Image 1 (cartoon, rainbow, N blue to C red):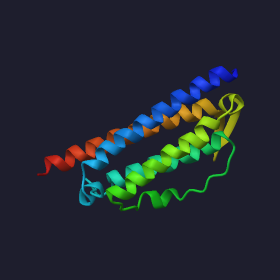
Image 2 (cartoon, helix red, strand yellow):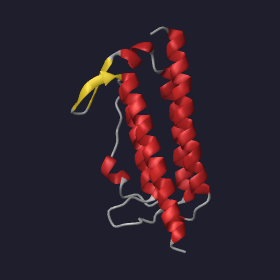
Image 3 (cartoon, one colour):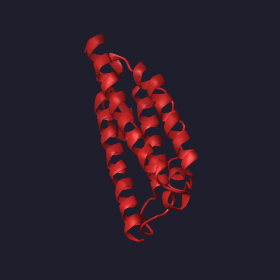
Image 4 (tube, rainbow, N blue to C red):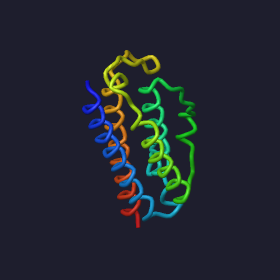
Length: 153
């Protein structure tokens, strides 16, 4: 892959991840803390948890593709209780991380095989596209959680 192709991919991925961030923001701005932290079922996740987990996974994946260390407490992401201001701040930081790290991805980062934990190595682009799909799944869960909350009233 040449530099121009890599640049196009970086900008495209930044736009895709950024659109997920924007849609999460739309959810957050409409909701109070009780709604953001409501779990529709005992084993289900709140909107706050879905956002924290999605952003933690995204940050870890982008750094892994760049072969950079990433500290993450995945279990803690599933215990958060956050208000709108904290979630919006996390989304703003995620946008800055996209600028700093995703736009710095090299052609080699996109094409070379990269390990992730105990999973088999894959090209960086595969990891990034998979993570985008993961983010969209959790966005849909957050939207459904809001619908479930609204139907209770």
